[in-house]
Length: 284
Image (cartoon, rainbow, N blue to C red):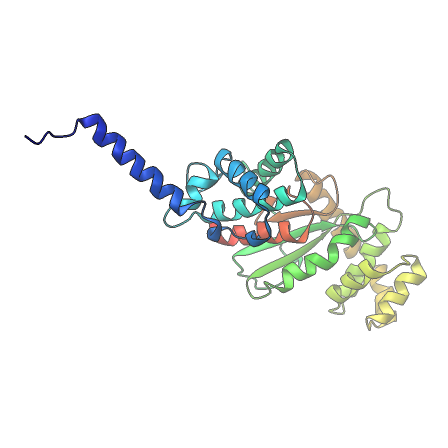
């Protein structure tokens, strides 16, 4: 006489089948965005898997990065967050540093309330109706702004058809030539050369009055019109308005970036800023 299996044996067998299937599939490495997982060592892969299993996804799918990465379809935030975890593992960050970085990504992507920036008559380039707007509060004498300038240009240029980029003046008090340089940039705008002057000022080694005039000459400005614009009240008022707006928004250092009004708190590197911009395109 054939005996039917006991219920608990059926449940156990089903669980073993599921576990075997999950193990066969393995971690969904092919779904990670922003990192070449083929470069990871075995130990690094293990750590990424561990972090992904213990890190909560902060948008869209509810669950760990691993769970949301394995979902069908894979959650876009989880795909980028997994890439971030891989980058931090390769960088040698501790668990505490990784957790802090994830928290900063969350703050950057989902603040309590995005800032309302005044972009009327602001110096911007890119489509006015762009889905994402990147705003920088910067200082032409700031060494960090100068270091970031090249990769900010690459981030913007790579998305020139879809991203709008605006620059706000935020001269730091301790930088003696920051205000004169900002005035020079705004004086060039009257001749339609703001962005040329903007780039040239970040590259200039001499921000003295004569140095600034030399930059103006190099970008092709009419020097008489340039000198006249420097004495106009409008550039000074614009600098004061930009800085006051930044202070009201909590800007306390340069450069400070906002992505669709959301202040960026991540690492000041090309890959992390670009990742935040692209994340905004996906989850806005």
